[in-house]
Length: 86
Image (cartoon, rainbow, N blue to C red):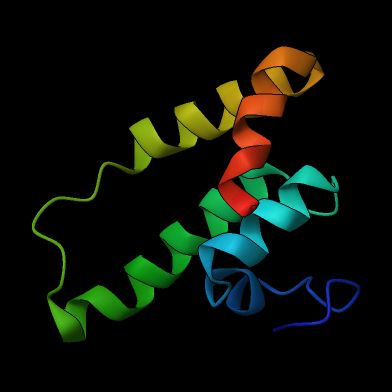
């Protein structure tokens, strides 16, 4: 597991597992937008060699991340999302 205090670089964010990412988002150490951007950057960097994705919906992923960021102030919504990390 990565040290949450040291997670700042896009490569570090893109290498988190789901539990680690959810924990950092829940603790507001990483925003959904930062996480999405890091993952999209990694896909962009590696997909030409790996050809792992047929279609990358970066605009949709970014929009959903921005929406999640905006909804962080809704305690009911975030209580449901917090269960992902448990």
